[in-house]
Length: 116
Length: 114
Image (tube, rainbow over all chains, first blue to last red; front, top):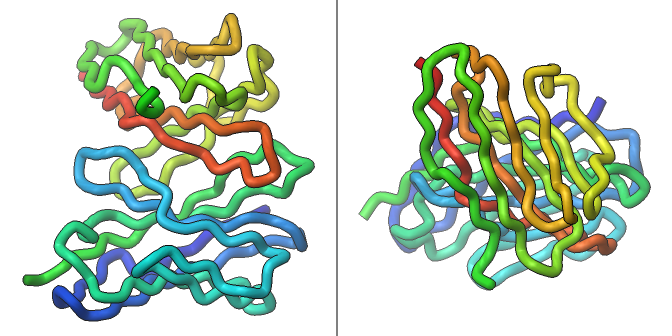
Protein backbone atom coordinates (compact mmCIF):
# COMPACT_ATOMS: atom_id res chain seq x y z
CA UNK A 1 0.00 0.00 0.00
CA UNK A 2 1.11 3.51 -0.70
CA UNK A 3 2.35 5.43 2.33
CA UNK A 4 3.73 8.90 2.94
CA UNK A 5 6.08 9.61 5.83
CA UNK A 6 7.03 12.97 7.27
CA UNK A 7 9.57 12.28 9.99
CA UNK A 8 9.83 15.83 11.33
CA UNK A 9 6.81 16.70 13.50
CA UNK A 10 8.13 20.23 14.03
CA UNK A 11 10.79 22.47 12.54
CA UNK A 12 11.94 25.99 13.34
CA UNK A 13 13.68 28.53 11.12
CA UNK A 14 14.87 32.06 11.57
CA UNK A 15 13.22 34.68 9.41
CA UNK A 16 15.11 35.08 6.11
CA UNK A 17 16.85 31.74 6.51
CA UNK A 18 16.33 28.51 4.56
CA UNK A 19 14.63 25.37 5.82
CA UNK A 20 14.07 21.93 4.30
CA UNK A 21 11.12 19.72 5.15
CA UNK A 22 11.46 16.00 4.49
CA UNK A 23 9.02 13.57 2.93
CA UNK A 24 9.42 9.98 1.85
CA UNK A 25 6.84 7.77 0.21
CA UNK A 26 6.36 4.20 -0.82
CA UNK A 27 4.79 3.12 -4.08
CA UNK A 28 5.21 0.51 -6.77
CA UNK A 29 3.87 2.86 -9.42
CA UNK A 30 6.06 4.69 -11.89
CA UNK A 31 3.72 7.54 -12.75
CA UNK A 32 2.22 9.67 -10.01
CA UNK A 33 2.06 13.18 -8.61
CA UNK A 34 3.46 14.58 -5.40
CA UNK A 35 2.31 17.72 -3.65
CA UNK A 36 3.16 19.98 -0.77
CA UNK A 37 0.24 21.71 0.89
CA UNK A 38 0.35 24.42 3.54
CA UNK A 39 -2.30 24.64 6.26
CA UNK A 40 -2.09 27.86 8.28
CA UNK A 41 -3.71 27.82 11.73
CA UNK A 42 -7.50 27.68 11.40
CA UNK A 43 -7.28 28.25 7.67
CA UNK A 44 -7.70 26.07 4.64
CA UNK A 45 -5.08 23.99 2.91
CA UNK A 46 -3.27 25.76 0.12
CA UNK A 47 -1.25 24.13 -2.64
CA UNK A 48 2.41 25.09 -2.39
CA UNK A 49 4.00 23.06 -5.15
CA UNK A 50 3.39 20.04 -7.36
CA UNK A 51 5.78 17.54 -8.95
CA UNK A 52 5.02 15.06 -11.73
CA UNK A 53 6.98 11.85 -11.24
CA UNK A 54 7.87 11.54 -14.93
CA UNK A 55 9.64 14.89 -14.85
CA UNK A 56 13.27 14.82 -13.82
CA UNK A 57 13.41 18.56 -13.26
CA UNK A 58 12.61 19.69 -9.76
CA UNK A 59 9.60 21.97 -9.46
CA UNK A 60 10.02 25.52 -8.17
CA UNK A 61 7.53 28.21 -7.19
CA UNK A 62 9.18 31.46 -6.17
CA UNK A 63 10.79 30.81 -2.75
CA UNK A 64 9.64 27.18 -2.71
CA UNK A 65 11.46 24.35 -4.43
CA UNK A 66 11.58 20.61 -4.16
CA UNK A 67 14.31 18.00 -4.27
CA UNK A 68 12.67 15.03 -5.96
CA UNK A 69 14.67 11.82 -5.81
CA UNK A 70 12.53 9.21 -7.54
CA UNK A 71 14.77 6.23 -6.94
CA UNK A 72 15.04 7.07 -3.26
CA UNK A 73 11.31 7.93 -3.09
CA UNK A 74 12.13 11.21 -1.45
CA UNK A 75 10.39 14.55 -1.96
CA UNK A 76 11.71 17.35 0.24
CA UNK A 77 10.53 20.95 0.27
CA UNK A 78 12.98 23.82 0.55
CA UNK A 79 11.74 27.22 1.66
CA UNK A 80 14.18 30.03 1.02
CA UNK A 81 14.14 33.48 2.63
CA UNK A 82 11.59 32.28 5.19
CA UNK A 83 8.86 34.74 6.14
CA UNK A 84 6.61 34.95 9.18
CA UNK A 85 3.68 34.08 6.94
CA UNK A 86 5.27 30.73 6.14
CA UNK A 87 4.45 29.49 9.63
CA UNK A 88 1.96 26.64 9.18
CA UNK A 89 1.51 22.89 9.01
CA UNK A 90 3.00 21.47 5.84
CA UNK A 91 1.64 18.27 4.40
CA UNK A 92 3.25 16.10 1.78
CA UNK A 93 0.78 14.21 -0.40
CA UNK A 94 0.95 11.43 -2.97
CA UNK A 95 -1.67 11.18 -5.66
CA UNK A 96 -2.58 7.88 -7.17
CA UNK A 97 -1.83 7.40 -10.84
CA UNK A 98 -4.06 8.68 -13.58
CA UNK A 99 -5.88 5.38 -13.94
CA UNK A 100 -6.99 5.41 -10.33
CA UNK A 101 -9.19 7.47 -8.12
CA UNK A 102 -6.86 10.45 -7.93
CA UNK A 103 -7.22 10.39 -4.16
CA UNK A 104 -4.41 11.78 -2.08
CA UNK A 105 -2.45 10.00 0.59
CA UNK A 106 -1.14 12.52 3.10
CA UNK A 107 1.71 12.42 5.55
CA UNK A 108 1.21 13.40 9.17
CA UNK A 109 2.55 16.88 8.60
CA UNK A 110 5.39 19.08 9.80
CA UNK A 111 4.68 22.16 11.87
CA UNK A 112 6.95 24.99 10.76
CA UNK A 113 7.69 27.81 13.16
CA UNK A 114 9.32 30.98 11.84
CA UNK A 115 11.26 32.94 14.43
CA UNK A 116 11.55 36.72 14.12
CA UNK B 1 -16.20 32.12 -7.71
CA UNK B 2 -13.71 32.31 -4.89
CA UNK B 3 -13.05 28.67 -4.12
CA UNK B 4 -14.45 25.70 -2.27
CA UNK B 5 -16.86 26.60 0.51
CA UNK B 6 -18.13 24.46 3.37
CA UNK B 7 -20.96 24.94 5.82
CA UNK B 8 -21.20 25.00 8.71
CA UNK B 9 -17.66 25.81 9.79
CA UNK B 10 -18.24 24.41 13.25
CA UNK B 11 -20.77 21.92 14.56
CA UNK B 12 -21.23 20.76 18.12
CA UNK B 13 -23.62 17.92 18.67
CA UNK B 14 -24.53 15.34 21.26
CA UNK B 15 -23.72 11.69 20.81
CA UNK B 16 -26.44 9.90 18.91
CA UNK B 17 -27.60 12.91 16.90
CA UNK B 18 -27.45 13.17 13.12
CA UNK B 19 -25.44 15.89 11.41
CA UNK B 20 -25.15 17.04 7.80
CA UNK B 21 -22.39 19.07 6.21
CA UNK B 22 -22.44 20.83 2.88
CA UNK B 23 -19.66 21.45 0.36
CA UNK B 24 -19.85 23.77 -2.63
CA UNK B 25 -16.97 23.08 -5.01
CA UNK B 26 -15.39 25.41 -7.52
CA UNK B 27 -18.07 25.76 -10.17
CA UNK B 28 -16.40 24.09 -13.15
CA UNK B 29 -14.88 21.24 -11.13
CA UNK B 30 -16.42 17.85 -11.77
CA UNK B 31 -14.55 15.89 -9.10
CA UNK B 32 -15.35 16.29 -5.42
CA UNK B 33 -13.61 14.64 -2.48
CA UNK B 34 -14.30 14.29 1.22
CA UNK B 35 -11.48 13.82 3.72
CA UNK B 36 -11.38 13.55 7.49
CA UNK B 37 -8.60 15.09 9.55
CA UNK B 38 -8.08 14.32 13.22
CA UNK B 39 -5.75 16.21 15.53
CA UNK B 40 -2.11 15.69 14.68
CA UNK B 41 -2.83 13.74 11.53
CA UNK B 42 -2.98 14.42 7.84
CA UNK B 43 -6.29 14.26 6.01
CA UNK B 44 -7.62 10.77 5.27
CA UNK B 45 -9.66 10.01 2.19
CA UNK B 46 -13.33 9.18 2.75
CA UNK B 47 -15.04 9.26 -0.64
CA UNK B 48 -15.16 10.97 -3.99
CA UNK B 49 -17.58 11.87 -6.74
CA UNK B 50 -17.15 12.36 -10.42
CA UNK B 51 -20.09 14.53 -11.34
CA UNK B 52 -23.02 12.91 -9.48
CA UNK B 53 -21.54 9.41 -9.34
CA UNK B 54 -19.90 8.27 -6.11
CA UNK B 55 -17.00 6.20 -7.44
CA UNK B 56 -15.10 5.16 -4.34
CA UNK B 57 -15.65 4.92 -0.61
CA UNK B 58 -12.98 4.32 2.01
CA UNK B 59 -13.22 1.63 4.65
CA UNK B 60 -13.28 4.58 7.07
CA UNK B 61 -16.76 5.41 5.80
CA UNK B 62 -18.95 3.24 8.01
CA UNK B 63 -22.60 2.65 7.23
CA UNK B 64 -23.45 5.59 9.48
CA UNK B 65 -21.90 7.88 6.89
CA UNK B 66 -23.55 8.79 3.62
CA UNK B 67 -22.57 11.28 0.97
CA UNK B 68 -24.49 12.62 -1.97
CA UNK B 69 -23.91 14.91 -4.89
CA UNK B 70 -27.34 14.91 -6.49
CA UNK B 71 -26.85 17.25 -9.41
CA UNK B 72 -23.11 17.07 -9.76
CA UNK B 73 -22.68 20.41 -8.03
CA UNK B 74 -22.75 20.69 -4.23
CA UNK B 75 -22.33 17.67 -1.98
CA UNK B 76 -23.59 16.71 1.44
CA UNK B 77 -22.03 14.42 3.99
CA UNK B 78 -24.37 13.02 6.64
CA UNK B 79 -23.34 11.22 9.79
CA UNK B 80 -26.07 9.33 11.59
CA UNK B 81 -25.99 8.41 15.27
CA UNK B 82 -22.80 10.35 15.88
CA UNK B 83 -20.14 8.95 18.17
CA UNK B 84 -17.36 10.74 20.02
CA UNK B 85 -14.87 9.16 17.64
CA UNK B 86 -16.47 11.08 14.80
CA UNK B 87 -15.06 14.32 16.21
CA UNK B 88 -12.73 15.65 13.52
CA UNK B 89 -12.31 18.22 10.80
CA UNK B 90 -14.17 17.21 7.63
CA UNK B 91 -12.54 18.61 4.52
CA UNK B 92 -13.95 18.90 1.06
CA UNK B 93 -11.83 19.32 -2.06
CA UNK B 94 -12.62 19.68 -5.73
CA UNK B 95 -10.71 19.30 -8.95
CA UNK B 96 -11.06 19.25 -12.69
CA UNK B 97 -11.02 15.90 -14.40
CA UNK B 98 -7.65 16.35 -16.00
CA UNK B 99 -4.21 14.85 -15.92
CA UNK B 100 -2.97 17.41 -13.45
CA UNK B 101 -6.04 17.04 -11.23
CA UNK B 102 -4.85 19.30 -8.47
CA UNK B 103 -7.29 19.33 -5.57
CA UNK B 104 -8.40 22.62 -4.03
CA UNK B 105 -9.56 22.41 -0.45
CA UNK B 106 -12.30 24.14 1.45
CA UNK B 107 -11.91 25.50 4.99
CA UNK B 108 -13.44 22.42 6.55
CA UNK B 109 -16.22 21.71 9.04
CA UNK B 110 -15.03 21.02 12.56
CA UNK B 111 -17.31 18.51 14.27
CA UNK B 112 -17.33 18.08 18.03
CA UNK B 113 -19.41 15.25 19.44
CA UNK B 114 -20.10 15.57 23.15
